[in-house]
Length: 274
Ligand SMILES: Nc1ncnc2c1ncn2[C@@H]1O[C@H](COP(=O)(O)OP(=O)(O)OP(=O)(O)O)[C@@H](O)[C@H]1O
Image (tube, rainbow, N blue to C red; front, side):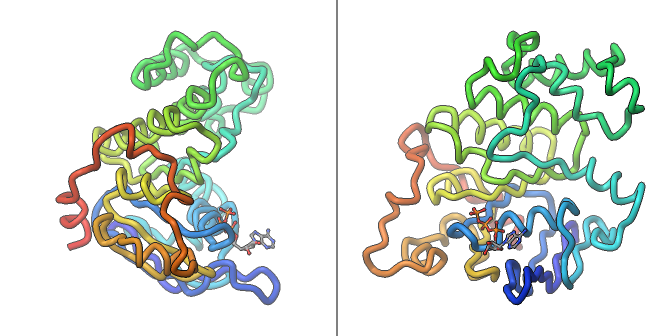
């Protein structure tokens, strides 16, 4: 089993933000987590990355007990498990290449980091990744000069500098217009397809989850209420996940990415779930 999540709970005071969550993933896939605001999606990702401690439960990745790692072992895991955020989290006034090289910070001395001395090899690697993501020509610009979609691709490039096994994306397209959202989702999907890195993305829109994911997990009030393939994600199921009544409209949870292209094949999804 590649990923084995058992009974993971996170309490904030008396409230369970994540409540006894369990699921397994047999092989690397592109997994979407959906649910209304406050369902526990971010808290779960943050526990996987060890930004937040779990109250109870276990997470094993490739046999390793993630929640009990400490010190250097925890930092090693964090670099193998890169996070991407809605707000990109770049240094706005710093140029794009430096932002990307920042992805190797965990391995750098404080002095070289403070003075921005990046080894040539790191710069070349950063440029190659930017080129792969189609934004090499932006390398010398300040991050703040780029469009939102370009900035998110820089954030993805920074994540790739760590050569992660897993990419955790917390609402990666929530701040983007449909065109940029599509470019960013296409990029994440391509990274999964070409490198076989696992992607777990919190998504707030159904059309994106259906189109890009092999498997979709629906959360409601901290619990998993759906776990299946995109084609099993019917309007009725979605209504249950979002805790909505019969007046629920899918339109309310759409980025309209689907209008820009065609839907994915679900064969891989079924294989992964088997
Ligand atoms: N640091 C915290 N202190 C107290 N409560 C928190 C904290 N972080 C999250 N919560 C609560 O835990 C619950 C789950 O929040 P979480 O951010 O994981 O949900 P989400 O599904 O990611 O929603 P959103 O998309 O709005 O971020 C919410 O009720 C939230 O208020």
